[in-house]
Image (cartoon, rainbow, N blue to C red; front, side, top):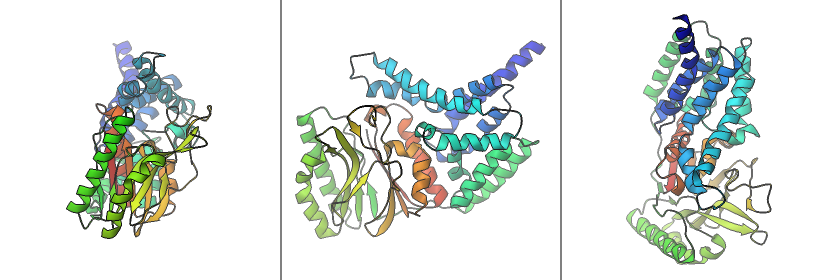
Length: 392
């Protein structure tokens, strides 16, 4: 009987970790309130090995969409079966993140260990894969409190790492969270409008021509239907090769300028004889000729520092711009899942978050919902509107 109880206690940590990974990262911002339970399951691990199993279960559950999504994304390669790519992208980064929680696990100085873990998984180099970060819970627990709420969230997690009566501690956190959520109201900006698309992946020049004209028609119609909107936002990369396609937007740009409107279009611009490129949002219309770059392109698939090609990265850029009469920060696709690009932006106090993604490869997974969830959580924490748009 004791052996059975002992085995049950050992399995409890990974089971709780997996439960929190699925529960918290399901597309609902308030579900992030479950993240402190992951810290408790890590704390109660009886050994470093079981701390690793607990963290691995959490990250693998949170990143479950990568198994299918990455397989679809890399499925065009003939080198290996799609499922091999999916499994590698799902398992390897999550095991690395779990390794941090295991390496810094211990029975002494647990708050300091927890703070060290949060730091390591939030900033480069490990922070480059630092998704499903527990500090994202700040936006669910303490909306509208800004930097104070972020510090309070981190302090709460550190305290739970050693609290003698965690149930009482959790009850106190829950009370504060309920009060914060009761008085908070989501911000919106009716002068910004997201234009979601279902264009899928690009499959060649003929397909790009049809996609381009579908976008032009969409913007022309939206401009006519919504005369009071100042900025329309299209998803990441739907504009194709901007060095060629920008000319097609001149007529639409003139019409938008006449109405005092602007559109942001996700596209790429080749650099260095096409060996590198910018992944960015390009503006057309009243506040045209602006370029807002993707600071953290997806490692391996887009950012490839070991090759002569790939998307350029701008890790230290703020992503904050004065645009269309307000101060904005852009979070393009992968940036939405990380911590340091968001916090770097909010050092300059933007008034709106513009999130754009191209999720054709993740259509039947949880990835798109999680991106939106994380972006909305940061908007709630700092009390700013979020304009989020995707292509599927």
